Length: 171
Image (cartoon, rainbow, N blue to C red):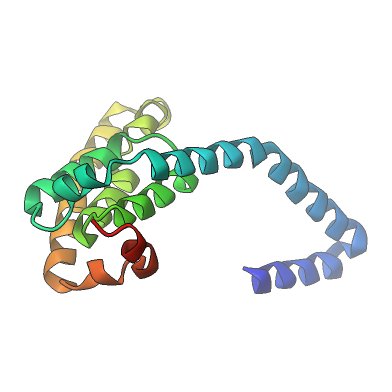
């Protein structure tokens, strides 16, 4: 990302001098200030989830031996949990730390990406109900499919996820 920033900064200087570069930097700073409260809340939420999560329950529902039910449950949780990547990736890491298996974590992340019900009203309002419905129908099986493929193609992946955290919070 730093390389892209440097390339774009050079392009801005070549097109409009330091004034255009300053304008871009100011615009970026304004955006940062406007999203800072959201970022702080998202990281606070993530931290609270990490300390409040019941590791035994996560392990029982999404850990070793949870199989297809664990994958389906994780996908559903991903679809209904609110927030953007600053919220759900730390939650996915918390699930891994608590003992969730890689297929469930993959299903959670893909479920969040494809089944995100919190964006459904906006999607229906902008794209229309028929298109939104078609998108949900077409993508419905993917979170579970990705979880199953992870289980079959990467059977040892769970041991590689956050190994240091997993050792600390071993259940």
